Length: 117
Ligand code: 5GP
Image (cartoon, rainbow, N blue to C red):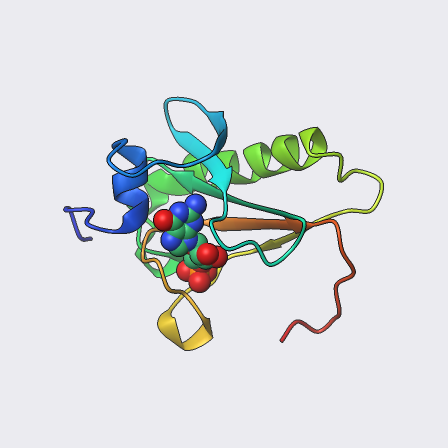
């Protein structure tokens, strides 16, 4: 696992880059996506540096669960319970991961097609 987090999300966690936070605790941070692709587009990240799901260890199981707990809570607070929301984790550049610090996209407030593109 990489130890130095030079990603933009590492900078957001350390407060070196501003973000519009909607949730924060000791382990998890959620903030609005800078270039939203839906009326609600929020990113949920662990403060621990994890690149993506190929980089997780047994000891991360609880933390990964917490990301989803926070995702549900944030989506509810954003008023998405009636229409629902989509979660996305891109794992690897080949499927669109552009920031290599794991993040759960929360997307809502518009129509979504299936299967996803
Ligand atoms: P990925 O393509 O890795 O799944 O998603 C990365 C997301 O991070 C993109 O939706 C992009 O808009 C968002 N993003 C990139 N840089 C920043 C930033 O500096 N601040 C915020 N809030 N979002 C960012």
